[in-house]
Length: 235
Image (cartoon, rainbow, N blue to C red):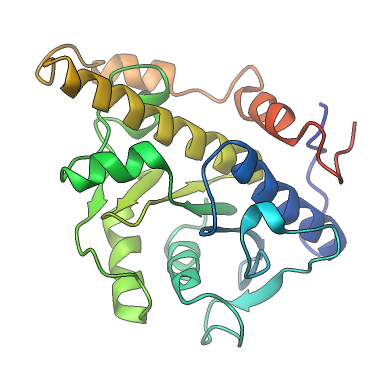
């Protein structure tokens, strides 16, 4: 395995700090974020580490993330929408990394009141379609954040109205891959609509179950690709 090393114990905070910085910068390289967005990794069953409160592409090796506990208010200086991370971690013990991002195709599709359908391989990870939180206000209160987590349910990602999306993975590499997959699925959906093919072919449920695999280093290769050249890259 390159770039992404096997996970150490959650107590290795220095590793987690580096990991969340790399994840943030990878999201920027993948054109998933400009001035807005944030990412996090779980530390243990009671807490997670969120990246520094600044544009993800501007996070430097010296920028420390903030530890957030699941049963408390957000620490001072942490962005209000990080509540969504907290609520998802509370409900989903299988989730160890989250990315909240605002990308062009997701935003354009959401403006039409739509989310991506399972029309190609990447879309299979969100079959039959990504759920949507339909309130266009920014999610900056506890009730709304809990609502987003409930609508997400067991899905891999959710479109947060016209304010981007949230994806939830088993590790940082999966979260990055899912963010890339969801944005590309939105690109394909918009192309289908533009071509007048809205009602045309989608993958079947069985095809989606088979295609949505992590075997073959699917997530790790995505991590390697988008972290190559990172100032904290480990070869």
